Amino acid sequence: MKRMTQQAPAKVNLALDILGRRPDGYHDMRMVMQTVSLYDTVTVEETAAGFALHTTGGDFIPAGKKTLEQQAAEAFFAAAGRPAPGLSVTLEKRTPAYAGLGGGSADVAALLRILRDAYCPGLSGAELERIGFAVGSDMPFCVRGGTALAESRGEVLTDLRPLPECWFVLCKPDFGIPTPSLFALVDGGELKHRPDTGGMAAALEAGDLEGVAARLGNVFEEVLPPACHEVFAIKRRLLDLGALNAVMSGSGPTVFGIFRQRRTAEQAAKALKEDYAQTFLAEPVKKF
Ligand code: C5P
Image 1 (spheres, rainbow, N blue to C red):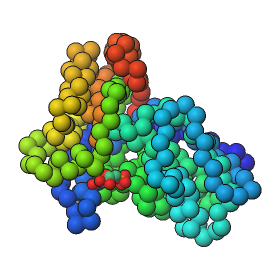
Image 2 (cartoon, helix red, strand yellow):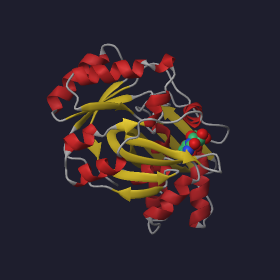
Image 3 (tube, protein in one colour):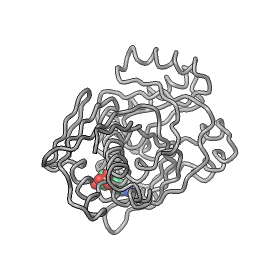
């Protein structure tokens, strides 16, 4: 194969609801997910042997001994029924890690799309999503991209009508929240406020941006420990700066606001960047 590159867009959760804990320890979810134009770049080259991962830019931290990238590549070649070639994978990072933006999953998903294009173009999207699911619950959506309802652990996807033209301002405060600890807090209590995911899907279908914005919601906000309450201050600032609405993405701590006008969003991003270096302006990205 020749050298191949793909962009790996981050995701935000327009809505995130947790329906309950499952016997396997995971949770049944109902989420409305959206890819956004904050990109890592993934480049793959064939080598004589082995698997090498290089990163430039951001704060990539490999999970465990064998990286998710290597696990996904091995699962891909096993599914494709052919021996794995040597591979060198380079990640150019822009999306912050441990931010609720799916940056790690987005990179693995881009790697899988490259491997499919290079070695097994006949492999269906569903099959590629299934391979991705073996390494992470968010992976099927990241392989697919666009606007989708995600259910079960996150792997049961229903495409939704793309968002009408709008802008996002993403703002990550300088702390991290481990995902499993937030799930544990949800398990320990009763959720009072649930996002209206059905109403959001209907608003998307109607092309009603205000209707979508009015239904942004994330049950993790309800269990955030006081040490993380800066999230609420950022939400207030985004609203003061003209966002239609704002919410935390995934297990946080990144907060994003939705804007109708580019200019308002640009000004909001500029203002927030003075206090939060990891502030980004982005647009919705369509399905691959
Ligand atoms: O699937 P993934 O490894 O990305 O999930 C990270 C962690 O998030 C899991 O270990 C689990 O604690 C939690 N999780 C969950 N239910 C889901 C997805 C993730 O409990 N549907």
